[in-house]
Length: 563
Image (cartoon, rainbow, N blue to C red; front, side, top):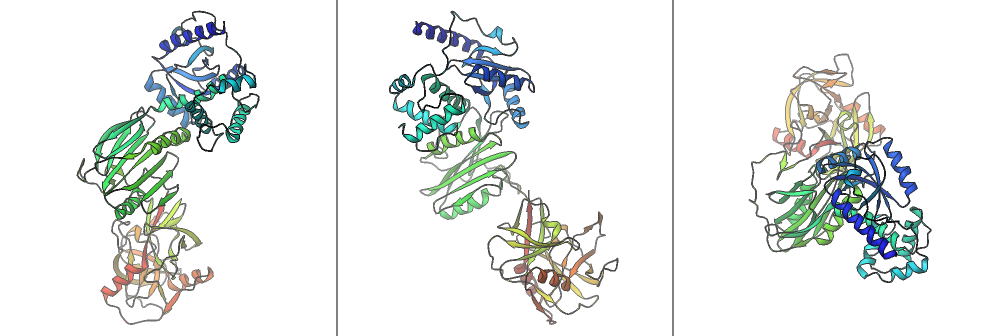
């Protein structure tokens, strides 16, 4: 009798799946009890249209939104995720596992044929622990491993996938049972095993992980083929662009090279928008990994030396969908193999663009300003405007720094590098009062860091006070750029007589050729009050222009603000 019931149910589900396959749903969650599913479906329906609930063949109850055409289902998925109205691991389903509808309008009923025969569904947990253990013994090694994988996917198991149901696996099973309203016996019944597997393998199906072999790049790997599609070669990358509105991307990386190439690629990849600033980074002798995350995307990059080449991959995924990201990433990590073949340097050559690297957008700082070293540990003095409200501050594009002290009234900021530096030169503040109409030189990254060295601009000291009589500043006649702000002002002897201030103050922009600088005594007081002993000099001997240029280059720092 039980065999006949299950056979009827199987026929019903098969026929239903055929009818439903033409449509797509946003599958939100699944619940083990009908009462809980109805409660959750009603809650969703209070906020979202087209909410349905269905029984499944494993006697779970799926909550879904739809039906839609496939493209519309993906659009709805992205919108609802972005609005935080559905869980991040919701996915688009073809509805093949859906059975009888238990909640929602009747717009789907026409798609669902009547069952051929009544198919009563046994309640979850129908097996006793002894019966469950007996049915468990019939599992293959693959079945047992898959259950461990599903438990790990659900967040209950974090040990080795060894297909052995030891104490760790039993504890994970108990925790899963308790979390889903079952008696926590540590032994899954047949229906519980089906329900557990359905969640994991349903998501796995939504990814369509497919092994590919790219002979030109010399890489074999599994990729989420339903979400990405091949677009082009553009050395050193093979671009797989989004195939849906979800925005998933895959890069394969392949180029001739050695450990020096690996290190250079490690630095270059971190300048790309696809590798957000927040995340762990590790450069080893023969490989590197980069992780990045922001409000829009998460990404993972792995590259290693393979013979006379460096090869790897990057997976870029929309934020808020970390569980599916980790599932796809694990498949890529375990399947990654190198084969013969290396992408040639000329593959897919296109017109060059300073803002692009092989078709990928290079990250640019929100603000670029100047600063200068004031002690032997790499402390930097700059303008406060340069570093306010920055998620990250860098010195010379390489070293992270933090704000150690600031003077809001005068607009000064003292930066401390996160790792000690060894500057080639540090500022020596002038102790003598500079002469009016004397020549001055300003060092700064006038072009926002496009050039790798600072520029030196010459001008004249016009007054020892501001237009409002402020004796803490000097007025200069010089043509400067916004990114010069924070740079040192030199006398002809190479002594630092001040720091260039921002051209915009209180919402007003200075006329061309007019600039102000905080004078040396003010800088000395600020630094002393914050524990910095700065060098001083009364040197008056003029320095050759070429020597002053070298001094400025050794002392001046590019300060970048990133968000």
